[in-house]
Image 1: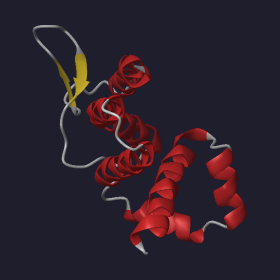
Image 2: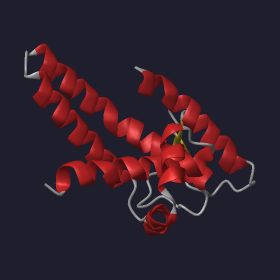
Image 3: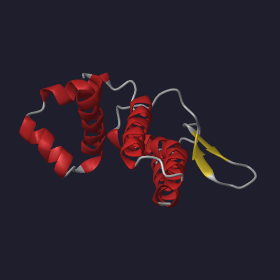
Image 4: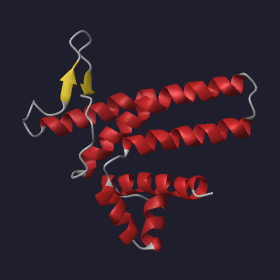
Length: 150
């Protein structure tokens, strides 16, 4: 419910960001029937601007997670083993984030050059959209270190 409720706020923020540039040909569309604003589907997110990249990524992640959450809630309602459901959910979140945060080589290289103290600071108290992007990439890397290298 939070993801569904938060989406319009993120979309409005992204819409405002795009239209401050006075360029209506940017990756944007308005649905004719409902008038809803939605980002156009793009093959990749431009990471040269952390603000824009983070908003686009959060919208994509939120859209992808809603059906995954519903599916895993249904598993729990059918008395599936909670540990298996949680493990499956975490892996599904990983897949969504990994797919969303493609083409981020420059940001991944930045993580390699940050000190452990700075990485911990970002994980515990991110400041700004750049830190939030890095926090997402740290989560992906931590998941891969935990599960993929076994």
